[in-house]
Length: 447
Image (cartoon, rainbow, N blue to C red; front, side, top):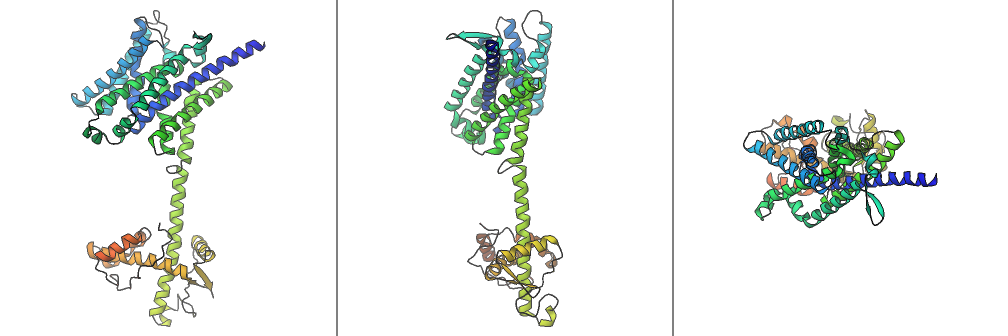
């Protein structure tokens, strides 16, 4: 009984290891496909290799053998050539040509598999979805250890792909991000692209027994797409994509065993969940981080608007008769009544008071030295932008305030000084209001 349990565990271990190696190879190739925006080409090749595999099997090859690898690569390169031919000679857009070629070749492969089912050991269902659960039963003996043939093929292919990526990495980076510069320095961009297509075909055929022609697309695209959200260096992206792919393979297989369902299908589902988590939690491009940045910007704008409003009211109190500003300024000098008409405004004023930028006095608000400095920066940005618009834009005088009210929160000291020099060092805005001088301090939103 113990030996049976041990054998059962070993079978699962081999299946998981095979899935992990297959996923790693696809993720490595998929990284380059995703950054070059060629994911659809990877999808096309993963389907279009089917007729090459079937023809190779009919010619005497066996799944995972050298002849089948050659047939798959040939079919993948044929896909690329036919796509380019339709694009250059047939007048089709590249994505349309890709769709025409890969669907036609894939359908041709399915037809051949079905027609020759009695003569070859290929089942159409296995071709589409893989047979990862049965991989441990087809083994070869290596150093007295029975190793699944699919595991051996996947390992050799992964090592070839990793070696090729290591040897050509700088070329791959230059070709991916600036193909024109690559051509200018003599890099054969077309040859590099062809090599990437051949690598995609190799990764696809190595994955064939494990996940089939349909779900291999998830292995090629999803881990790399998730990694692209998480990191911003290509080599980091490759490592993260491989880690996500391996984790998806292991968790997916175990979940499939627990729920008694398709291992390849569950692995693709887990990869989809990984992408969803990355899309939500990515530090720079994730949904939560973008939401946090928007909320922080809205909060900063609200606080700066409160500071600027108090600054303007204090300015008005200083230059107008007391009776003219009685509705907004209290009897104490430099105090401003800012009605807390909305909860957000009251919250902003509470925060400004807590941070020492305003003080509440007799029902009004007074700027501290720090608050007056920051408010002066905002008002200066606003009035300088109004002065620039008044000189260079055909905008009526009474329409200058709205655009300046938003831009005032995004101008740094260098831009303000440049605008001031451009408008001729004038001391007032188009409304005749004084433009505050540049403070040595920085506004709340400046770096």
